[in-house]
Length: 389
Image (tube, rainbow, N blue to C red; front, side):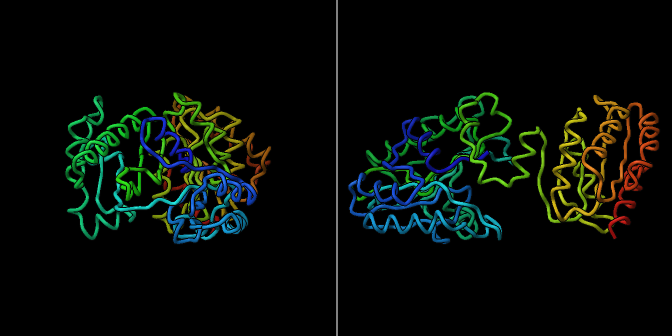
């Protein structure tokens, strides 16, 4: 789960990390008023979207008057931001952050993320702030410092101090930077984050450390512990089908192919996508309905898949365990009657009560002429690829 920069800034501030003052606005009038209220000779107007690269796309603007703040807001609120991170359709802008411009002496990069190679969260820092860390790691890997974090103890004070010295901080600034990284570790753990990033972390010309941009990615699986964080989701930044699947408790990822996949289990989903590609077609999505498929879940899953205009056929690959195959077959038939299968649907079932399930599907085929059954996964893949060819 992603959140906006202004929300991330608030989390940092709540954990003792210094961030500059700012106002959140949703209209040109409010942007102009915010410029006046902040009483700064220059401010930055920043679009709040779930994507980076805002400055290059023209959605971060330095303004020196209320009129310029108004103009910047008019542009951002009436245009979708488009870059390589958003895709060709871009993302809408409905929220802006107006903040005083900062006199920057030096920029740094600080983050904590999950290092899957080490199997631990890792503190990452570089004195090359303001740039994409991937670019720095590629061109000058020696400038990126990493420190693995104990899974129970979190960031330790000595680790934060060592990292501050590696970044070149001295005297009071070294103490301030170490405290900031220690507090960043506390925020990472408290929020059940998978990524927290400050880029750039700056030292001002008045020798003050500030986090002037922030990003949080939160672990969806931990949201049951954080109802207050679930309320921060901005559905306008997500694809509509993703939001719909999330509300239905389904795991859905849109892809570029033409064969929809409805499966139960992530491993089975990956195997299904692989075999579709093996037989010459491309999957249109990854849709995992979970281990216990219900009739309601199956109906909504079909509706989501069929909402994609690129889908020309559907492969249903279900292993009946907790949910028995006959119950799954009944759910699929109900889905067909309620939704209407306008494209070929090939069903492969295996597991408990599979013979009973095949009988249910066979009896339903007269009412659902586009429904086919398959004996195994290879047979299913061949049939659905042939049906859309």
